[in-house]
Image 1 (cartoon, rainbow, N blue to C red):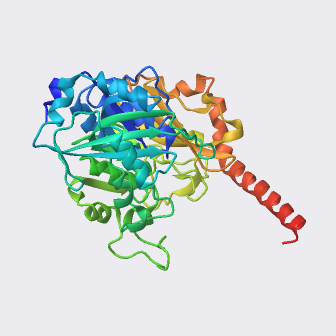
Image 2 (image 1 turned 45 degrees about the vertical axis):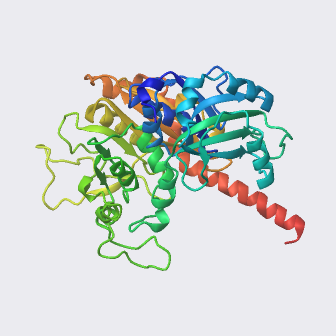
Image 3 (image 1 turned 180 degrees about the vertical axis):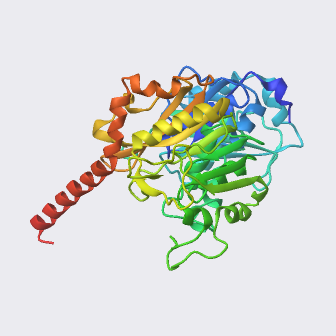
Length: 466
């Protein structure tokens, strides 16, 4: 194969999965940023399209992205394209022969695949399309099982499954380079995980969050609402050292009732460390501890390369912190009495986000990223509801729909400066502060929406007589 450096000015085509549409662009951008490469699409770029053509990359860049991406299915070196097979032929015949010849020489083997998006072709139709490409100067032999080079004819039949045209909207012919990491979604499935909880993060979303955070080998990653450690699992897979805290003693220590079907109590070895041991990344496990995210327990220093978390929303997990209902919570010297037992208090969502951003501003290294989920009541959402901080730059804001009236948004921020004395109070003077205080009522609005929907269902049932 030709050296990647000698083929650095080619166009590359990415075939992306059609799920998690909103997360794809930030993921590819973040993975390219790990190699200090800008995202440079071609002129016809459409964000919602399953095919993205990118410029100014090397084959090594592409392989690095595909070694991490769970949003991309495959990547190719683009040789020709067009709206019709006639245009494709013209494009291929104009492609420089010296770039084709290394893959078409005698003694080499190859295979041509036909892949279609939004339409299924019969085996006979696929063979017919391959035979029609006899104008390409292949001199090697066909090998279906173990070819040296794989080529793909990709046909795009649009995005609407209800309106499938007879002919493709666009056609590409490419040399296959690498597949993405879609297999991680299956192999790290929560269904097969040793230790799980009610809110264990989906494997695919966990890896997307790690990619958005640009987690890399030897990073130190922290989750302040660690739960059962799903995010630690994905980050450790990419070679990062991981640690976390949670206010729930039973979850941290793997005690209490099990969330697994047909199992009443958790076993003695059900814990976060066991999860990393299951995936052979136990050596990346630093530790987890019981701690209140609203209380400072870390020394004042930039410790973490990334902070990745899924705060509780008050739906399946309560939002709480330690405190006291008494006016005097501490002795004059600031220490609790030995017999003091802290009580649980409500922890409003707006306070969670304020504390999280302030913590990240103080404890992320410069250039480190904060990635977290923000629950949203969709009828009232506006961009002003996303919390901001003077030390953190908003990188991306992606939506995952939960229901007709609720969603959660994956927020990615990057630390751009060290905090100053008044930065922790900036939210009080920020006009955005009042709008995002509305998140405090998310739980009530969530269940209000469920009740309204349930009422409609009951009305339909009465009318139908069921």
